[in-house]
Amino acid sequence: MSMTAAVGDAHADPHHIGLVVEHPGPAPKRIVTAYGFWVFLLSDIVMFSCFFAAYAVLVSQTAGGPKGSEIFEQRNVAIETVCLLLSSFTCGMASIAADVRNRFWFYLGMAVTCVLGLIFLAIEFREFADLVARGYGPSRSAFLTAFFSLVGCHGLHVSAGVLWLLTMMAQVFAKGFRADVLRRMMCFALFWHALDIIWVGVFSVVYLLGGGS
Image (cartoon, rainbow, N blue to C red; front, side):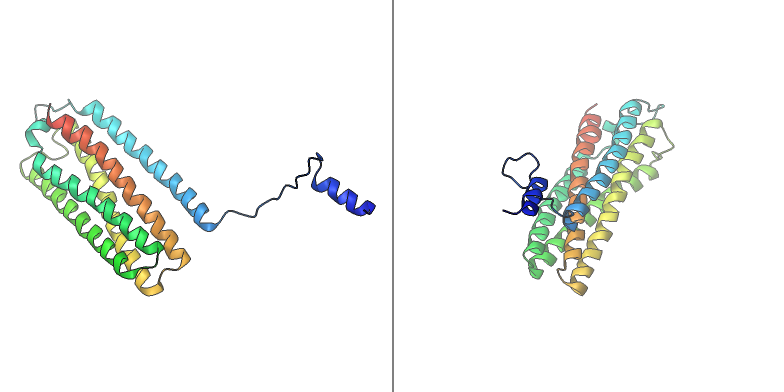
Protein backbone atom coordinates (compact mmCIF):
# COMPACT_ATOMS: atom_id res chain seq x y z
CA MET A 1 0.00 0.00 0.00
CA SER A 2 1.37 3.40 -0.92
CA MET A 3 1.95 6.13 1.66
CA THR A 4 -0.68 8.32 -0.03
CA ALA A 5 -3.31 5.61 0.34
CA ALA A 6 -2.31 5.06 3.97
CA VAL A 7 -2.66 8.74 4.75
CA GLY A 8 -6.02 8.78 3.00
CA ASP A 9 -7.20 5.81 5.06
CA ALA A 10 -6.05 7.51 8.24
CA HIS A 11 -8.12 10.57 7.45
CA ALA A 12 -11.12 8.46 6.51
CA ASP A 13 -10.84 6.37 9.67
CA PRO A 14 -9.04 8.51 12.30
CA HIS A 15 -9.81 6.12 15.19
CA HIS A 16 -8.63 3.04 13.28
CA ILE A 17 -11.73 1.00 14.02
CA GLY A 18 -12.23 -0.22 10.49
CA LEU A 19 -15.34 1.90 9.79
CA VAL A 20 -15.58 4.73 7.32
CA VAL A 21 -18.11 7.37 8.31
CA GLU A 22 -20.24 8.57 5.42
CA HIS A 23 -21.83 11.99 5.51
CA PRO A 24 -25.27 11.88 3.86
CA GLY A 25 -26.51 14.78 1.82
CA PRO A 26 -29.35 17.13 2.73
CA ALA A 27 -32.64 15.62 3.92
CA PRO A 28 -35.33 14.97 1.27
CA LYS A 29 -37.74 17.85 0.62
CA ARG A 30 -40.62 15.77 1.98
CA ILE A 31 -38.88 15.46 5.37
CA VAL A 32 -37.93 19.14 5.48
CA THR A 33 -41.47 20.20 4.53
CA ALA A 34 -43.05 17.92 7.13
CA TYR A 35 -40.68 19.17 9.83
CA GLY A 36 -41.42 22.80 9.02
CA PHE A 37 -45.15 22.19 8.99
CA TRP A 38 -45.01 20.43 12.35
CA VAL A 39 -43.40 23.58 13.75
CA PHE A 40 -46.35 25.59 12.39
CA LEU A 41 -48.85 23.14 13.89
CA LEU A 42 -47.15 23.32 17.28
CA SER A 43 -47.37 27.11 17.21
CA ASP A 44 -51.05 26.81 16.33
CA ILE A 45 -51.59 24.42 19.24
CA VAL A 46 -49.89 26.91 21.57
CA MET A 47 -52.37 29.55 20.40
CA PHE A 48 -55.31 27.25 21.07
CA SER A 49 -53.86 26.44 24.48
CA CYS A 50 -54.14 30.14 25.32
CA PHE A 51 -57.79 30.12 24.24
CA PHE A 52 -58.45 27.02 26.36
CA ALA A 53 -56.75 28.65 29.36
CA ALA A 54 -58.80 31.84 28.93
CA TYR A 55 -62.01 29.82 28.68
CA ALA A 56 -61.16 27.84 31.82
CA VAL A 57 -60.65 31.09 33.74
CA LEU A 58 -63.74 32.87 32.41
CA VAL A 59 -66.25 30.01 32.20
CA SER A 60 -67.95 31.04 35.44
CA GLN A 61 -68.02 34.77 34.61
CA THR A 62 -71.53 34.91 33.19
CA ALA A 63 -72.43 38.41 34.47
CA GLY A 64 -75.98 37.28 35.11
CA GLY A 65 -76.25 35.77 31.65
CA PRO A 66 -76.74 32.14 30.63
CA LYS A 67 -74.43 29.28 31.52
CA GLY A 68 -73.26 26.71 29.05
CA SER A 69 -75.84 24.17 30.15
CA GLU A 70 -78.57 26.67 29.26
CA ILE A 71 -77.50 27.40 25.70
CA PHE A 72 -75.68 24.34 24.35
CA GLU A 73 -77.57 21.96 22.07
CA GLN A 74 -75.87 18.64 22.75
CA ARG A 75 -77.58 16.91 19.83
CA ASN A 76 -76.13 19.41 17.33
CA VAL A 77 -72.72 19.20 18.97
CA ALA A 78 -72.81 15.41 18.67
CA ILE A 79 -73.59 15.69 14.95
CA GLU A 80 -70.70 18.14 14.53
CA THR A 81 -68.35 15.77 16.30
CA VAL A 82 -69.37 12.76 14.22
CA CYS A 83 -68.97 14.76 10.99
CA LEU A 84 -65.49 15.98 11.90
CA LEU A 85 -64.25 12.58 13.08
CA LEU A 86 -65.60 10.89 9.96
CA SER A 87 -63.93 13.57 7.85
CA SER A 88 -60.61 12.62 9.44
CA PHE A 89 -61.10 9.05 8.21
CA THR A 90 -62.04 10.12 4.68
CA CYS A 91 -59.10 12.54 4.60
CA GLY A 92 -56.81 9.65 5.51
CA MET A 93 -58.31 7.57 2.71
CA ALA A 94 -57.69 10.43 0.27
CA SER A 95 -54.06 10.63 1.43
CA ILE A 96 -53.58 6.91 0.82
CA ALA A 97 -55.19 7.23 -2.61
CA ALA A 98 -52.80 10.10 -3.43
CA ASP A 99 -49.81 7.98 -2.42
CA VAL A 100 -50.87 5.21 -4.81
CA ARG A 101 -51.89 7.71 -7.53
CA ASN A 102 -55.53 6.66 -7.62
CA ARG A 103 -57.53 9.65 -8.84
CA PHE A 104 -60.99 8.17 -8.29
CA TRP A 105 -60.54 7.36 -4.61
CA PHE A 106 -58.61 10.57 -4.06
CA TYR A 107 -61.43 12.74 -5.40
CA LEU A 108 -64.05 10.67 -3.61
CA GLY A 109 -62.27 10.92 -0.26
CA MET A 110 -61.66 14.64 -0.65
CA ALA A 111 -65.24 15.31 -1.77
CA VAL A 112 -66.71 13.46 1.23
CA THR A 113 -64.27 15.27 3.53
CA CYS A 114 -65.39 18.60 2.05
CA VAL A 115 -69.08 17.79 2.50
CA LEU A 116 -68.57 16.73 6.12
CA GLY A 117 -66.57 19.87 6.81
CA LEU A 118 -69.29 22.06 5.30
CA ILE A 119 -71.96 20.33 7.39
CA PHE A 120 -69.86 21.01 10.48
CA LEU A 121 -69.52 24.68 9.56
CA ALA A 122 -73.22 25.05 8.77
CA ILE A 123 -74.23 23.68 12.18
CA GLU A 124 -71.72 25.87 13.96
CA PHE A 125 -72.80 28.98 12.05
CA ARG A 126 -76.43 28.27 12.90
CA GLU A 127 -75.50 27.86 16.57
CA PHE A 128 -73.69 31.21 16.61
CA ALA A 129 -76.49 32.98 14.73
CA ASP A 130 -79.10 31.58 17.12
CA LEU A 131 -77.14 32.71 20.18
CA VAL A 132 -76.68 36.22 18.80
CA ALA A 133 -80.39 36.42 17.90
CA ARG A 134 -81.28 35.54 21.50
CA GLY A 135 -79.03 38.30 22.82
CA TYR A 136 -76.22 35.97 23.84
CA GLY A 137 -73.47 37.42 21.68
CA PRO A 138 -69.77 37.69 22.55
CA SER A 139 -70.27 41.00 24.38
CA ARG A 140 -72.93 39.60 26.76
CA SER A 141 -70.44 38.19 29.26
CA ALA A 142 -66.82 37.14 29.67
CA PHE A 143 -67.91 33.50 29.42
CA LEU A 144 -69.53 34.08 26.03
CA THR A 145 -66.53 36.08 24.84
CA ALA A 146 -64.25 33.15 25.66
CA PHE A 147 -66.70 30.68 24.10
CA PHE A 148 -67.04 32.55 20.81
CA SER A 149 -63.28 33.12 20.65
CA LEU A 150 -62.32 29.49 21.18
CA VAL A 151 -65.01 27.80 19.11
CA GLY A 152 -64.98 30.52 16.46
CA CYS A 153 -61.21 30.30 16.02
CA HIS A 154 -61.53 26.58 15.43
CA GLY A 155 -64.33 27.21 12.95
CA LEU A 156 -62.13 29.66 11.04
CA HIS A 157 -59.44 27.00 10.83
CA VAL A 158 -61.95 24.50 9.46
CA SER A 159 -63.07 27.09 6.88
CA ALA A 160 -59.45 27.59 5.82
CA GLY A 161 -59.07 23.80 5.66
CA VAL A 162 -62.04 23.47 3.32
CA LEU A 163 -60.57 26.11 1.00
CA TRP A 164 -57.21 24.35 1.11
CA LEU A 165 -58.96 21.04 0.34
CA LEU A 166 -60.59 22.50 -2.78
CA THR A 167 -57.23 23.93 -3.83
CA MET A 168 -55.61 20.50 -3.51
CA MET A 169 -58.31 18.91 -5.66
CA ALA A 170 -57.73 21.58 -8.31
CA GLN A 171 -53.97 21.07 -8.19
CA VAL A 172 -54.25 17.32 -8.65
CA PHE A 173 -56.64 17.89 -11.54
CA ALA A 174 -54.26 20.34 -13.22
CA LYS A 175 -50.85 18.89 -12.32
CA GLY A 176 -51.43 15.29 -11.32
CA PHE A 177 -49.66 13.60 -8.43
CA ARG A 178 -46.36 15.46 -8.74
CA ALA A 179 -43.90 15.37 -5.86
CA ASP A 180 -44.62 18.98 -4.84
CA VAL A 181 -48.39 18.34 -4.93
CA LEU A 182 -47.98 15.27 -2.72
CA ARG A 183 -45.98 17.30 -0.21
CA ARG A 184 -48.78 19.85 -0.02
CA MET A 185 -51.30 17.05 0.35
CA MET A 186 -49.28 15.67 3.26
CA CYS A 187 -49.34 19.09 4.95
CA PHE A 188 -53.07 19.43 4.38
CA ALA A 189 -53.72 16.02 5.94
CA LEU A 190 -51.62 16.95 8.99
CA PHE A 191 -53.56 20.20 9.32
CA TRP A 192 -56.97 18.52 9.05
CA HIS A 193 -56.12 15.80 11.56
CA ALA A 194 -54.81 18.46 13.97
CA LEU A 195 -58.17 20.26 13.74
CA ASP A 196 -59.92 17.02 14.68
CA ILE A 197 -57.68 16.60 17.72
CA ILE A 198 -58.34 20.19 18.82
CA TRP A 199 -62.08 19.67 18.37
CA VAL A 200 -61.96 16.68 20.71
CA GLY A 201 -60.56 19.09 23.31
CA VAL A 202 -63.25 21.69 22.53
CA PHE A 203 -65.99 19.07 22.70
CA SER A 204 -64.74 17.73 26.02
CA VAL A 205 -63.91 20.99 27.80
CA VAL A 206 -66.58 23.31 26.42
CA TYR A 207 -69.59 21.17 25.64
CA LEU A 208 -69.33 18.11 27.87
CA LEU A 209 -68.04 19.82 31.02
CA GLY A 210 -69.81 23.11 30.36
CA GLY A 211 -73.05 21.53 29.28
CA GLY A 212 -73.31 19.51 32.44
CA SER A 213 -72.53 22.34 34.87
